[in-house]
Amino acid sequence: MWPPNWAEFSAALSAWCWPTLNVGYSDDQGHHRPTMPQDGFRYGLEASQVSPFRMPAHEWRGYIPFDDMPARSIRPRAFWPHANSRVTPAGSPYPLSLDWLAPYRAERIGKALQGRDRLTPADMLAVQTDVYSEVDQKLGRRFADAIDHTPGTDDRLRKAAALMRSWDGRLIHWLRPRLAGYPGSRRALALILEPKLAKEAAEYHWGESNFAEEEIIMHASADWLPAAFKNWDALLAEAVRKGMEDGKAPADVAPVELWELARRRCRAPAGRVPAAVGPHGRTGPQPLSGDDTTVKQVERAYGPSQRFTMDWSDVDGSTENIVLGESGNPLSPYFRDQWDDYYQGTTFALPFSATAVAAQTRHTLRLIP
Image 1 (cartoon, rainbow, N blue to C red):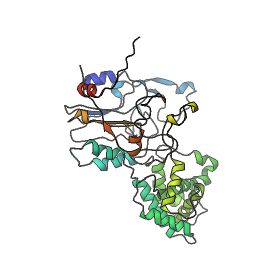
Image 2: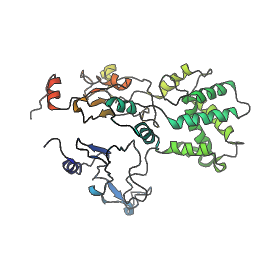
Image 3: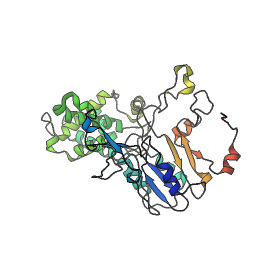
Image 4: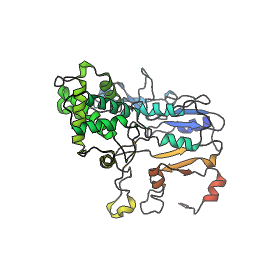
Protein backbone atom coordinates (compact mmCIF):
# COMPACT_ATOMS: atom_id res chain seq x y z
CA MET A 1 0.00 0.00 0.00
CA TRP A 2 1.34 3.43 -0.89
CA PRO A 3 1.51 5.84 0.69
CA PRO A 4 1.82 4.12 4.08
CA ASN A 5 -0.25 5.24 7.03
CA TRP A 6 1.20 6.18 10.41
CA ALA A 7 1.07 2.62 11.77
CA GLU A 8 2.97 1.24 8.79
CA PHE A 9 5.41 4.12 8.80
CA SER A 10 6.07 3.67 12.52
CA ALA A 11 6.61 -0.07 12.12
CA ALA A 12 9.19 0.54 9.39
CA LEU A 13 10.85 3.27 11.43
CA SER A 14 11.23 0.98 14.44
CA ALA A 15 13.93 -0.93 12.55
CA TRP A 16 16.00 2.21 11.96
CA CYS A 17 19.18 2.34 13.99
CA TRP A 18 21.78 4.62 12.36
CA PRO A 19 22.22 7.53 12.37
CA THR A 20 20.22 9.25 15.07
CA LEU A 21 17.70 11.54 13.39
CA ASN A 22 14.67 13.67 14.06
CA VAL A 23 11.95 12.53 11.66
CA GLY A 24 8.69 14.29 10.93
CA TYR A 25 5.64 12.40 9.68
CA SER A 26 2.72 14.10 7.96
CA ASP A 27 -0.09 12.98 5.67
CA ASP A 28 -3.11 14.40 3.87
CA GLN A 29 -5.42 13.05 6.58
CA GLY A 30 -4.21 15.57 9.12
CA HIS A 31 -1.77 13.36 11.03
CA HIS A 32 1.48 15.02 12.06
CA ARG A 33 4.01 13.41 14.36
CA PRO A 34 7.66 14.36 14.88
CA THR A 35 9.67 11.52 16.38
CA MET A 36 13.23 10.43 16.97
CA PRO A 37 13.79 6.90 15.64
CA GLN A 38 16.73 5.21 17.27
CA ASP A 39 16.01 1.72 18.43
CA GLY A 40 19.74 1.12 18.29
CA PHE A 41 20.64 3.99 20.64
CA ARG A 42 22.60 2.38 23.44
CA TYR A 43 22.60 3.85 26.91
CA GLY A 44 25.05 3.58 29.77
CA LEU A 45 24.85 3.25 33.53
CA GLU A 46 25.41 6.97 34.00
CA ALA A 47 24.07 8.41 30.77
CA SER A 48 23.51 11.82 32.40
CA GLN A 49 27.19 12.21 33.22
CA VAL A 50 30.47 12.19 31.35
CA SER A 51 31.65 8.69 32.20
CA PRO A 52 34.84 6.72 31.51
CA PHE A 53 33.30 4.00 29.34
CA ARG A 54 36.45 1.90 29.43
CA MET A 55 35.56 0.97 33.00
CA PRO A 56 33.26 -2.09 33.31
CA ALA A 57 30.82 -0.16 35.51
CA HIS A 58 30.12 2.20 32.64
CA GLU A 59 29.59 -0.32 29.86
CA TRP A 60 26.52 -0.11 27.63
CA ARG A 61 23.49 -1.60 29.35
CA GLY A 62 21.16 -2.16 26.42
CA TYR A 63 18.96 -0.51 23.82
CA ILE A 64 16.19 2.02 24.30
CA PRO A 65 12.84 0.48 23.30
CA PHE A 66 11.38 2.17 20.25
CA ASP A 67 8.14 3.00 22.06
CA ASP A 68 10.15 4.91 24.68
CA MET A 69 11.86 7.17 22.15
CA PRO A 70 10.68 10.80 22.32
CA ALA A 71 7.72 11.54 20.06
CA ARG A 72 4.72 13.81 20.05
CA SER A 73 1.60 14.40 18.01
CA ILE A 74 0.95 17.85 16.64
CA ARG A 75 -2.54 19.27 16.74
CA PRO A 76 -3.95 20.85 13.57
CA ARG A 77 -2.53 24.28 12.72
CA ALA A 78 0.38 23.75 15.12
CA PHE A 79 4.05 23.18 14.44
CA TRP A 80 7.18 21.95 16.16
CA PRO A 81 10.57 23.28 15.01
CA HIS A 82 13.38 20.78 15.43
CA ALA A 83 16.45 22.90 14.58
CA ASN A 84 18.89 20.62 16.45
CA SER A 85 17.23 21.54 19.73
CA ARG A 86 16.91 19.46 22.86
CA VAL A 87 14.55 16.53 22.28
CA THR A 88 14.13 15.13 25.80
CA PRO A 89 12.86 16.96 28.90
CA ALA A 90 14.90 17.30 32.08
CA GLY A 91 14.66 14.15 34.17
CA SER A 92 14.07 11.84 31.21
CA PRO A 93 15.23 8.25 31.89
CA TYR A 94 17.00 8.35 28.51
CA PRO A 95 18.80 11.70 28.11
CA LEU A 96 20.06 10.65 24.62
CA SER A 97 22.55 13.49 24.55
CA LEU A 98 24.20 16.00 26.83
CA ASP A 99 24.82 18.41 23.98
CA TRP A 100 22.37 20.29 21.77
CA LEU A 101 22.27 23.64 20.07
CA ALA A 102 21.23 26.87 21.72
CA PRO A 103 17.52 27.77 21.24
CA TYR A 104 17.98 30.65 18.78
CA ARG A 105 17.13 28.81 15.56
CA ALA A 106 14.01 27.14 16.98
CA GLU A 107 12.85 30.45 18.46
CA ARG A 108 13.30 32.21 15.13
CA ILE A 109 11.28 29.54 13.30
CA GLY A 110 8.56 29.87 15.91
CA LYS A 111 8.37 33.64 15.47
CA ALA A 112 8.34 33.30 11.68
CA LEU A 113 5.44 30.81 11.61
CA GLN A 114 3.35 31.77 14.63
CA GLY A 115 -0.18 32.85 13.71
CA ARG A 116 0.27 32.20 10.00
CA ASP A 117 -1.96 29.95 7.90
CA ARG A 118 -2.05 28.64 4.33
CA LEU A 119 1.71 28.73 4.04
CA THR A 120 3.14 28.13 0.58
CA PRO A 121 6.41 26.45 -0.46
CA ALA A 122 7.76 29.96 -1.12
CA ASP A 123 6.90 30.94 2.47
CA MET A 124 8.74 27.91 3.78
CA LEU A 125 11.77 28.59 1.58
CA ALA A 126 11.95 32.08 3.07
CA VAL A 127 12.13 30.50 6.54
CA GLN A 128 14.68 27.88 5.46
CA THR A 129 16.99 30.55 4.04
CA ASP A 130 16.52 33.06 6.88
CA VAL A 131 19.84 34.54 8.05
CA TYR A 132 18.69 36.93 10.78
CA SER A 133 20.46 36.43 14.12
CA GLU A 134 18.73 38.14 17.02
CA VAL A 135 21.45 37.18 19.50
CA ASP A 136 24.24 38.53 17.29
CA GLN A 137 22.40 41.79 16.78
CA LYS A 138 21.84 42.08 20.52
CA LEU A 139 25.49 41.33 21.33
CA GLY A 140 26.69 43.71 18.61
CA ARG A 141 24.76 46.57 20.19
CA ARG A 142 26.08 45.64 23.63
CA PHE A 143 29.65 45.74 22.32
CA ALA A 144 28.95 49.09 20.66
CA ASP A 145 27.62 50.48 23.93
CA ALA A 146 30.70 49.19 25.77
CA ILE A 147 33.01 50.95 23.31
CA ASP A 148 31.04 54.19 23.71
CA HIS A 149 31.50 54.06 27.49
CA THR A 150 35.18 53.10 27.56
CA PRO A 151 37.68 55.99 27.70
CA GLY A 152 40.59 55.97 25.30
CA THR A 153 39.09 53.90 22.48
CA ASP A 154 40.59 54.56 19.05
CA ASP A 155 38.91 55.61 15.81
CA ARG A 156 38.78 52.06 14.43
CA LEU A 157 36.90 50.79 17.47
CA ARG A 158 34.45 53.68 17.25
CA LYS A 159 33.81 52.89 13.58
CA ALA A 160 33.21 49.26 14.49
CA ALA A 161 30.75 50.39 17.17
CA ALA A 162 28.85 52.49 14.63
CA LEU A 163 28.59 49.52 12.26
CA MET A 164 27.36 47.15 14.96
CA ARG A 165 24.82 49.66 16.22
CA SER A 166 23.26 50.21 12.77
CA TRP A 167 23.38 46.57 11.64
CA ASP A 168 20.01 44.89 10.95
CA GLY A 169 21.13 41.47 12.24
CA ARG A 170 21.16 39.71 8.86
CA LEU A 171 24.27 37.63 8.24
CA ILE A 172 24.61 38.20 4.52
CA HIS A 173 27.98 37.34 3.10
CA TRP A 174 28.76 40.65 1.42
CA LEU A 175 28.00 42.86 4.42
CA ARG A 176 28.78 41.44 7.85
CA PRO A 177 29.47 44.20 10.35
CA ARG A 178 28.65 41.53 12.88
CA LEU A 179 32.19 40.30 12.20
CA ALA A 180 33.47 43.23 14.17
CA GLY A 181 31.50 41.82 17.08
CA TYR A 182 31.69 38.09 16.33
CA PRO A 183 35.40 37.80 17.14
CA GLY A 184 34.60 40.07 20.07
CA SER A 185 32.11 37.65 21.58
CA ARG A 186 34.52 34.74 21.20
CA ARG A 187 37.34 36.86 22.58
CA ALA A 188 35.19 38.00 25.49
CA LEU A 189 34.63 34.41 26.55
CA ALA A 190 38.36 33.77 26.32
CA LEU A 191 39.17 36.85 28.41
CA ILE A 192 36.69 35.67 31.03
CA LEU A 193 37.80 32.03 31.16
CA GLU A 194 41.56 32.23 30.65
CA PRO A 195 42.28 33.59 34.17
CA LYS A 196 40.55 30.50 35.56
CA LEU A 197 41.31 27.80 32.96
CA ALA A 198 44.52 29.03 31.29
CA LYS A 199 45.10 27.16 27.99
CA GLU A 200 42.12 24.90 28.62
CA ALA A 201 39.83 27.87 27.95
CA ALA A 202 40.27 27.27 24.20
CA GLU A 203 38.55 23.87 24.58
CA TYR A 204 35.58 25.25 26.47
CA HIS A 205 32.94 25.08 23.74
CA TRP A 206 29.81 23.02 23.34
CA GLY A 207 26.48 23.19 21.51
CA GLU A 208 24.99 25.79 23.82
CA SER A 209 28.12 27.89 24.30
CA ASN A 210 26.51 30.74 22.33
CA PHE A 211 23.75 30.87 24.92
CA ALA A 212 26.29 30.86 27.76
CA GLU A 213 28.13 33.75 26.12
CA GLU A 214 24.94 35.75 25.82
CA GLU A 215 23.97 35.13 29.43
CA ILE A 216 27.39 36.07 30.78
CA ILE A 217 27.83 39.16 28.61
CA MET A 218 24.31 40.55 28.87
CA HIS A 219 23.87 39.98 32.61
CA ALA A 220 27.40 41.21 33.42
CA SER A 221 27.64 39.52 36.80
CA ALA A 222 30.50 40.76 38.96
CA ASP A 223 31.37 37.12 39.70
CA TRP A 224 32.46 36.62 36.08
CA LEU A 225 34.49 39.83 35.69
CA PRO A 226 38.27 39.14 35.79
CA ALA A 227 40.30 41.25 38.21
CA ALA A 228 42.32 42.74 35.35
CA PHE A 229 39.33 44.80 34.16
CA LYS A 230 37.76 47.76 35.89
CA ASN A 231 34.27 46.99 34.57
CA TRP A 232 32.41 45.04 31.87
CA ASP A 233 32.57 47.87 29.35
CA ALA A 234 36.37 47.77 29.47
CA LEU A 235 36.42 44.00 28.99
CA LEU A 236 34.03 44.05 26.03
CA ALA A 237 35.84 46.91 24.30
CA GLU A 238 39.12 45.02 24.68
CA ALA A 239 37.45 41.85 23.37
CA VAL A 240 36.40 43.65 20.17
CA ARG A 241 39.87 45.10 19.73
CA LYS A 242 41.55 41.71 20.14
CA GLY A 243 38.93 40.02 18.00
CA MET A 244 39.48 42.43 15.14
CA GLU A 245 43.21 41.95 15.51
CA ASP A 246 42.85 38.14 15.42
CA GLY A 247 40.59 38.37 12.36
CA LYS A 248 42.93 40.78 10.57
CA ALA A 249 40.17 43.33 10.13
CA PRO A 250 41.15 46.24 7.85
CA ALA A 251 42.45 49.44 9.38
CA ASP A 252 39.52 51.36 7.91
CA VAL A 253 36.54 49.37 9.15
CA ALA A 254 34.12 49.91 6.29
CA PRO A 255 31.15 47.65 5.49
CA VAL A 256 32.24 46.99 1.93
CA GLU A 257 35.54 45.50 3.13
CA LEU A 258 34.18 43.27 5.86
CA TRP A 259 32.91 40.61 3.47
CA GLU A 260 36.53 39.67 2.74
CA LEU A 261 36.85 38.68 6.37
CA ALA A 262 33.66 36.65 5.95
CA ARG A 263 35.00 34.95 2.83
CA ARG A 264 38.06 33.71 4.67
CA ARG A 265 35.88 32.33 7.42
CA CYS A 266 33.19 30.63 5.31
CA ARG A 267 33.50 28.22 2.46
CA ALA A 268 31.13 26.12 0.42
CA PRO A 269 30.09 22.90 2.22
CA ALA A 270 31.11 20.69 -0.68
CA GLY A 271 32.52 17.26 0.08
CA ARG A 272 36.13 16.37 -0.59
CA VAL A 273 36.88 14.94 -4.00
CA PRO A 274 40.10 13.56 -5.51
CA ALA A 275 42.51 16.21 -6.70
CA ALA A 276 42.60 14.55 -10.12
CA VAL A 277 38.98 15.45 -10.69
CA GLY A 278 39.95 19.11 -10.65
CA PRO A 279 37.64 22.10 -10.34
CA HIS A 280 34.71 20.20 -11.90
CA GLY A 281 34.16 18.37 -8.64
CA ARG A 282 34.55 21.31 -6.29
CA THR A 283 32.93 24.68 -5.78
CA GLY A 284 36.01 26.23 -4.19
CA PRO A 285 35.94 28.60 -1.20
CA GLN A 286 32.95 30.93 -1.45
CA PRO A 287 31.28 33.34 0.97
CA LEU A 288 28.14 31.98 2.58
CA SER A 289 25.46 33.77 4.54
CA GLY A 290 24.25 32.62 7.95
CA ASP A 291 25.98 30.97 10.90
CA ASP A 292 25.15 28.51 13.68
CA THR A 293 22.59 30.84 15.31
CA THR A 294 20.49 31.38 12.16
CA VAL A 295 17.80 29.15 10.67
CA LYS A 296 20.06 28.71 7.66
CA GLN A 297 22.76 27.07 9.73
CA VAL A 298 26.19 27.47 8.13
CA GLU A 299 29.76 27.10 9.29
CA ARG A 300 32.99 26.17 7.53
CA ALA A 301 32.44 22.43 7.83
CA TYR A 302 28.66 22.13 7.40
CA GLY A 303 25.45 23.61 6.07
CA PRO A 304 21.88 22.51 5.25
CA SER A 305 21.99 19.10 3.55
CA GLN A 306 18.79 19.82 1.62
CA ARG A 307 15.73 22.06 1.49
CA PHE A 308 12.47 20.17 1.19
CA THR A 309 8.83 21.27 1.39
CA MET A 310 5.83 18.95 1.03
CA ASP A 311 2.63 20.64 -0.14
CA TRP A 312 -0.28 18.25 0.49
CA SER A 313 -2.63 20.46 -1.54
CA ASP A 314 -0.40 20.00 -4.60
CA VAL A 315 2.08 17.19 -4.09
CA ASP A 316 3.76 17.82 -7.44
CA GLY A 317 4.29 21.42 -6.35
CA SER A 318 6.48 20.26 -3.47
CA THR A 319 10.08 21.42 -3.60
CA GLU A 320 13.50 19.87 -3.06
CA ASN A 321 17.08 21.07 -3.33
CA ILE A 322 20.22 19.08 -2.48
CA VAL A 323 23.53 20.87 -1.93
CA LEU A 324 25.40 19.80 -5.07
CA GLY A 325 22.95 17.45 -6.74
CA GLU A 326 21.63 13.92 -6.63
CA SER A 327 24.65 12.22 -8.18
CA GLY A 328 27.63 11.32 -6.04
CA ASN A 329 29.89 10.89 -9.06
CA PRO A 330 32.06 14.01 -9.60
CA LEU A 331 32.29 13.18 -13.31
CA SER A 332 28.53 13.04 -13.78
CA PRO A 333 26.77 16.04 -15.39
CA TYR A 334 24.30 15.80 -12.49
CA PHE A 335 26.97 16.05 -9.77
CA ARG A 336 26.81 19.82 -9.29
CA ASP A 337 23.59 20.69 -11.11
CA GLN A 338 21.76 21.87 -7.99
CA TRP A 339 24.53 23.99 -6.48
CA ASP A 340 23.44 27.31 -7.99
CA ASP A 341 19.92 26.92 -6.55
CA TYR A 342 21.35 25.97 -3.17
CA TYR A 343 23.82 28.86 -3.13
CA GLN A 344 21.33 31.48 -4.31
CA GLY A 345 18.57 30.32 -1.94
CA THR A 346 16.20 29.27 -4.72
CA THR A 347 14.61 25.87 -5.34
CA PHE A 348 12.49 23.94 -7.84
CA ALA A 349 9.46 21.65 -8.00
CA LEU A 350 9.86 18.00 -7.04
CA PRO A 351 7.75 15.66 -9.20
CA PHE A 352 6.08 13.31 -6.72
CA SER A 353 3.18 11.48 -8.31
CA ALA A 354 3.86 8.64 -10.76
CA THR A 355 2.39 10.67 -13.60
CA ALA A 356 4.57 13.70 -12.91
CA VAL A 357 7.69 11.57 -12.54
CA ALA A 358 7.03 9.79 -15.84
CA ALA A 359 6.45 13.10 -17.62
CA GLN A 360 9.83 14.46 -16.52
CA THR A 361 11.90 11.28 -16.87
CA ARG A 362 14.77 11.73 -19.34
CA HIS A 363 16.44 8.34 -19.00
CA THR A 364 16.18 5.26 -16.80
CA LEU A 365 19.04 3.40 -15.13
CA ARG A 366 18.37 -0.29 -14.45
CA LEU A 367 20.67 -2.29 -12.18
CA ILE A 368 20.27 -5.96 -13.10
CA PRO A 369 22.01 -8.55 -10.88
